[in-house]
Image 1 (cartoon, rainbow, N blue to C red):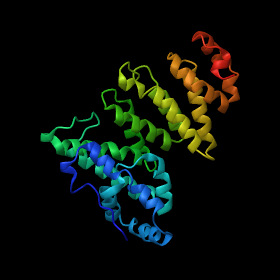
Image 2 (image 1 turned 180 degrees about the vertical axis):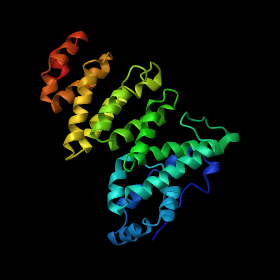
Image 3 (image 1 turned 45 degrees about the vertical axis):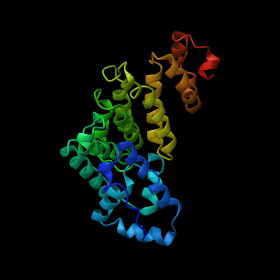
Image 4 (image 1 turned 180 degrees about the horizontal axis):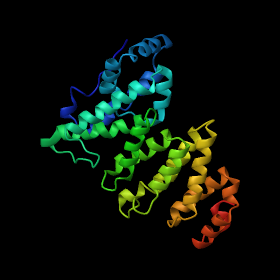
Amino acid sequence: MKKMSMVCMTALCLTTQDISASMRYWIDSCLDNYSEAWAELVREEFKDAAKLRKNFDEGLLGNPPERMTEFKRKFGVSDEPMLTVLMDIIREATKAGGTWKGVAWDETRQDVAIATWRMEKAIPWLGICADTKAKQLLLGIATGKTNWELSRIYAVQAYLRRADAQEIRDGIARLLADDVRTTDMTGLVVSDRVYGYALQAHAEAGDDVQKREAIVASLSAALVKEEDKEIFVGIDKRLAELSKTYADSPQRKAALERLNIPAEKGGQ
């Protein structure tokens, strides 16, 4: 089987951005450039936890989340071994000084910066394998107002992707709560991003009717109270297209009037 070892041996001479760029297309190569016979060999290899961990260390971390579900399906990787590997990576990185608050690149602290990078890049993968405990970790990262913006963005997306219907209800309410919303750049994560990633999770939910309904209900309840006019306009039309109940609700009409938005601009 062809190997594509990338970064772990050379990481100390790269910035975190360099690392991400080096790894970014590893998963595309796996999915697009190899035969089914090779894929079957990989499926067997990934049944071994140590080999699965080795592949995460050598290439899987740092890939964009868009194709992770496809990767998991193609290579038959079940939740438990993947979750074990990711939580081990996070624990080890934390012991090495990594932090959800982010670390500026410093030539004298490269080990800490790389540990932080590894923690951050593990988050999107949790979106396809997290158990209840790991989902609570994601929610904690997403709602931690002092955490680094990018860590929070990744955690919002991963949590909403993996959450079940009840977790969606609890999570969206928590992510949009007044004590979580802030007015600095980080505040964008718990407002604009929550709505957008929730709609993405709705599209990905497929036949999970309960989750789809929970997303619509939770977003509807939040959006009619939204004070940010720009966010409201950006989400209202999409939500109205998903739910006639929301589109025709008196609460939506009141929100349009309160924000001085013409009904046609709001999406009717």
